[in-house]
Image (cartoon, rainbow, N blue to C red; front, side):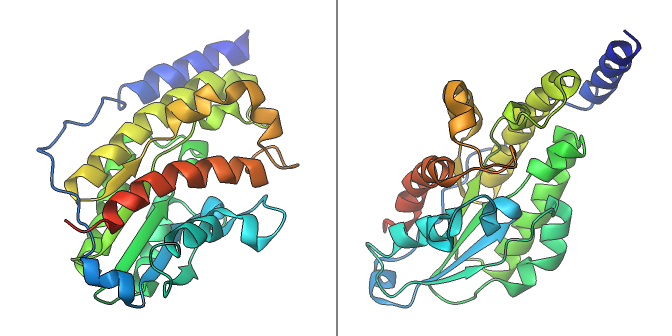
Length: 239
């Protein structure tokens, strides 16, 4: 009973900072010019252990490689740089990875971050600040790059999350993802919604997670990459 009361108090306290972000006027999504299909497109994947591909059985089956494989179908000269840092929060990714992103006239950046922020119980307002710093830094470094930002799945679906924290982490995943979407909108990035998709697939989540109960397995990464590639296709399509 005491634990339940403490969890309720924590939820009430955190949700005072969980208002949905105010939606800014939509900015046109930045797309790469048509000539990039014949150039050395530089794909950089930025993020945490999901970007790095923890849980996959082989590098060719992780998130970054699946995105790369999809990109090469239309941009055969594309190259891949994976900067994913397991355990990193969005603030840490902004501080350590942005300066290493591939630069050039034909650059595509895919960002997947935030699950560790939820684990630390960061609020949507924190997500707003962190993602503004991260995406703002990317835009400053690469003003004309195509940018795809992957939203949060429902982190609470992991069996490793204590049951008492599941309602809170589910709410933080949902509202944090809305903050990420708002930041993506502000910086002309395509957004990949994962929260509803993860809820839809929740009945088979055990079959989509690796042995650690946290990271996706090969099947889980295929679903994530499939959703992301829909948005990737929009930014690679010339206006």
